[in-house]
Image (cartoon, rainbow, N blue to C red):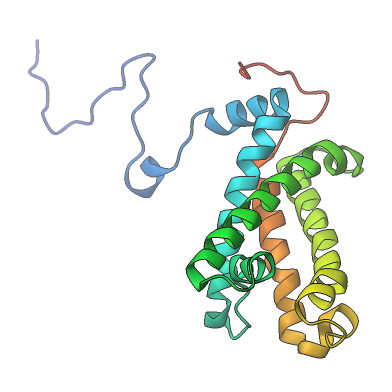
Length: 201
């Protein structure tokens, strides 16, 4: 009987896989995403509310950071607060505006799941759900640029799709809502209708 060579590579034990080394070891390779998609499919209301919270938070942060990309800052909480309580202190305005803005983002996500998502003739693949989110973001951007900003923030001076305020603002409005739609479609990602609901409990 010969002694084992300590320098020889270890032989894998049946049923036990060796973890990958380096960067690949930190990339999830389990069934987390399929289980999440199955859960969202079985719980569309709760899934859309969570997706709305995530999408609103990320889009809001990006909008405030737009100045770093040479675009006007889109601080919707401040704009909403100034509309809701125009004579209040800046702190009170921001709190009221953030509450209103965040609630709007979550409600619009619920409407996306219940009224918009199912009517877009695209299969519910990961890419298909993102396309639906971007399409929804485009609809919201059109409403914002064509009505919300001209009617409420700069009455009669914004021009078509708010282009009278500069193309960067108009592009920023669309970019903001595309970011919202992207994360909305990424998190609210139900399975195709013909897929089983296994693992959704």
